[in-house]
Image: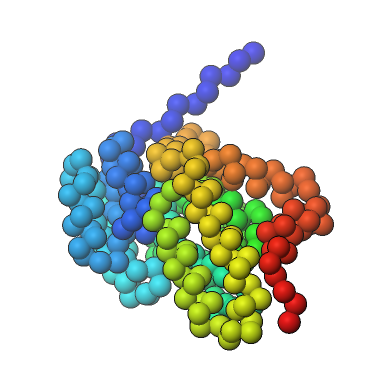
Length: 299
């Protein structure tokens, strides 16, 4: 006996809030969700970014929302603004997309940089979720947390970023189980390498961190780290995964009759998830050894 597949839910009349919509994947996703019928509150930190985003939208369904996920007052103000604008059905979807990427050998990462990484990618996502949960409860809606392939496998020189992504994965699991009695689903979307401006920011951040590290320590890592940055940028530029693939996946998580707990976007993200389940740590370590050993020197 064949069971008919449940139809996706219609986006029309539903409101979605997305953080980190100024640039990159967040911006593209906000515009695509609006074009496909959602009312979108697009979180930006600067008013001028919001106006640029509004100008690119196809309708008045997209509304910029001043929102800094590391600022508690900004979060409260944004949640109150949305609450005043939506009807009694509340907010249907929250997409926790805002994030930053600290790339450097962990020995070189100062505690302040690590705190910034976690504050933006993890603590900020929790704080925004807490602020919007009353509205999500009314709609029995959806939370979509954006992680990455590095939420499955931590690679050298992206340890700070992977720490945040692993934490977001664990947070999402706990949140999904806690919110199930209220009918709120929690999904994680894990994009792999996609060509966006973030990769140039990754290089700038990494080089600044190494420049501030004592020379005797920085010199241990500089050459392999530079090669890693080059390979990382090359991988993103040659990736067949497009921002449209990411936006389409977020749309699926928001409209599927039975949303998955995790969605991988791109072959590299799917491969990372598979390897993390199949290979022992020792095998993964041997694979990454080539990345770190070539020009490293012992002190």
